[in-house]
Amino acid sequence: MKKKQIIWLAVVLAVLAAVYGALFLSNKREAQKEQEEEASQVIQVTEIEDIRAFSYEAPEQEQLHFEKKEDVWVCTDDEKMELEQSYPDGIAESFGQLTASRKLEEIDALKDYGLEEPAYTVTLQPEDGEEVQLLIGNSTGEEYYLQVKGEEDVVYTISSTAVSTLDHSLADMEKAETEEETEETDQ
Image (cartoon, rainbow, N blue to C red; front, side, top):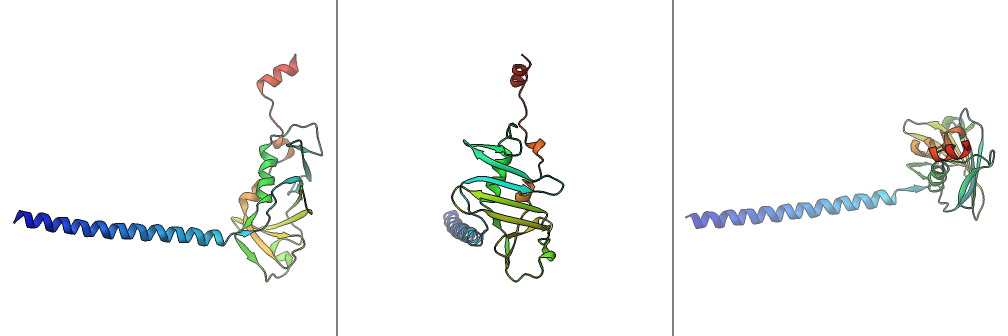
């Protein structure tokens, strides 16, 4: 009698293991399919590998110009200032490989998106190629409206994360002196 129960339990356990395995594989395939669909829905706004210069205007800030000289970003408005390279690198990376969550092709008046008088204007100069100007308008909560100059019939929505890279003054970007550097200049 006990032998039959053990066999019966082993069969039930095998069936449950097979069902679990099938569900696990099905969920894994579904997750992979969702990832592939998300990747195919990425809207690439800019795809610039090598930016040699850029400038931008942000609210309540002066227009800032940056250029890469010998692999180091310098502010052409104050070339003597040493910059913390993470700031211009972040801007170049964010706007050089900019993606959008939506592409609006049937747009109304630009003023509805804040693009008639943009809050931010970013100008990118690729190593090889023509200048690209990005106009950033109103916030939509977690995103902003953006238009690429020359594409007047299209408005994109982009993440506020990219725009937040522009919210630093030149003083914020100045490289902080280390204790060693301070001692050297005092001598």
